[in-house]
Length: 304
Image 1 (cartoon, rainbow, N blue to C red):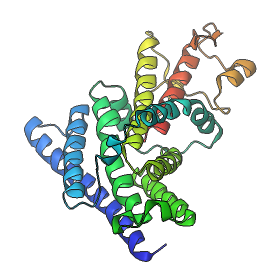
Image 2 (spheres, rainbow, N blue to C red):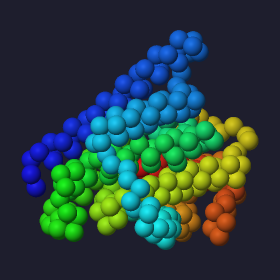
Image 3 (cartoon, one colour):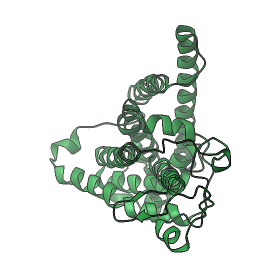
């Protein structure tokens, strides 16, 4: 692979990060002046992402660093979009298995993720703006450059070695820009699949459909599950809370419901220990908190 496409790909990634930082600082300063508060809110994050997305689209599309062409739409291959959504939903179980069986990585933006996942306006960021901006940059600009398509290289003549190398580099950059270890493994796998879809179709639209379906699934699972299970009304003793004041401190033993059920869980509160595995319900307040923690980690791990 030539050096120039790789350099250009890294430059595009750095521009993406710079725009993100600039939008975050600009919106935070203005928001602080208008609201008089330094607290980060969902509304501020939504406005930041909206400003960031507009800047990304303008900066990458106007000079034609990224290409958005109607040619693929003219082929009317609508079934490809359907299969992209099916693929995103079908990978929920394998990704959950991967998440449960790999070491727990630090989540540096857990609080921000939970704020977005738990708010209706957060879906605008997770389900719409993030897939749009990221696909334009990482498939429409970075992978297109690495494949040499911006220089007129015939898509059919691109060597397989170059294709797989380009997809791997773009996936690695996609994982790194998340700047959060908890998301990087899945972001790399998702980036590889999205890159392969772009190479096969020549369009970012199937990738957008996959990205939208994946992030939407994470949002729905998180939002609906936590709203459908009542949190304990009575206060828990301080010894039952983690360092952030949340229930769910039980030491993980691979953190799988089946193993918890078979091995038993220490119960300092003395409340009945029953598992309704078929409905994912529980009357033990400690285990309920544990399940909440696992659902949070699943969703923040799997959206990209």
